[in-house]
Image (cartoon, rainbow, N blue to C red; front, side, top):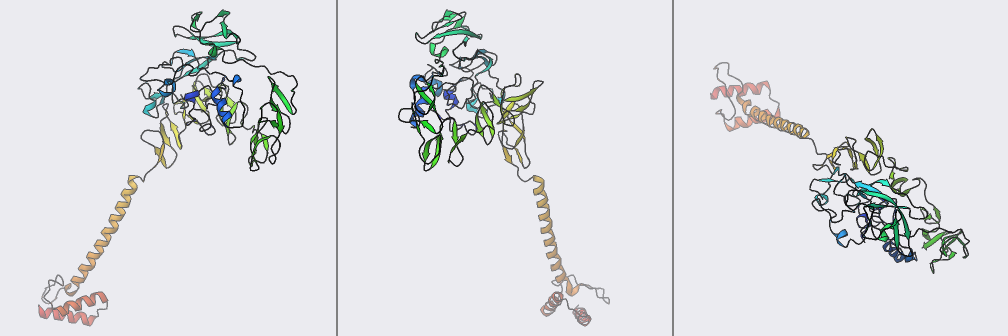
Length: 474
């Protein structure tokens, strides 16, 4: 069985993958009707913490009798599907939801596909949720009557595929038959133009009523079908037979079921281990009722077809006209989305949040990011901004100016040195010398020129001597 790899914190790595077992009680998908399947019971038994009664297991309709291809192959390929009662290829088509408890309509594909592997229609348009590998389902529109003590209504698809209806039923678990609107519905048959599914789909399990009769076991406070399911005070369910109550293991306090190295890792009676494992405490109430995943005081997933509020403090109903995951809808425009989602710039949809993204379009493509970041070319993430071109231009100009200044200085010094012996005109002859190299002075005169130029200590007398010598040589 695949493990969830795309859910939020508290779901990924801890539940069955929804694409494989959407309606299983242990899947990451939250819905109003989930099933405790034999697979989940087997897993619980493998942990050695539970002794399941497989006669109480429930059969889920999702993937029922559809073969291995249902989980191995793509849900839709080039706009076609082999499972039209599960996956939607038409957003306007009405069909029963996968657990047959409501009438649904094909999910709308508004978001851009994050990867071509999910582009089932060749249009680069996907549903907004990644929980089902972006496979479009039938989104609940009209809920059938919710059972309390017995199944009262179930959803039935029309034979011609043009719609579905909620119809009254009656289940006979002893004979494994059921009636629809008072008429016996044989699997594979038709009643009132509606298909008759298998008995296990229409009547997935027998709803048990809890008796208030006293429990015959010491320390037991609640019994169902002769088995203790809740113990009193510091008692816990016995691992030996799973029916009676016994005392908690030493060292971990009351209500602790599993004690490892003096720390409690599992508790009894709907309690949870404390942060330090020293005791069992009540579940935090900060996320409110109907919240199934609470992380740091914020709800990230709800049950009963609800969605987390914008601040994650509670579970709220889906708005009617703003699409899935919108929690505040005003004049058909979404004002706030549930956890893990953000409102698109056009306010037409809720799209998955992208780290540091401040605005996104209806396709979920990021259009602007927080300071120092900008959207990637494909709009799927925000990346660090590089140094602007104009900064490099300024740096280049400054460096060029510095180099030019150094070169000019060197040339000026060299010119000054060369011109020092003959940079003054002879007032008598009107003749001047251009530079040291062009003059016909002796090497000793050149040395004297250079020495005097660099020492900076030339006196009037030496200047006159140089001038006189130069005149004579000329």
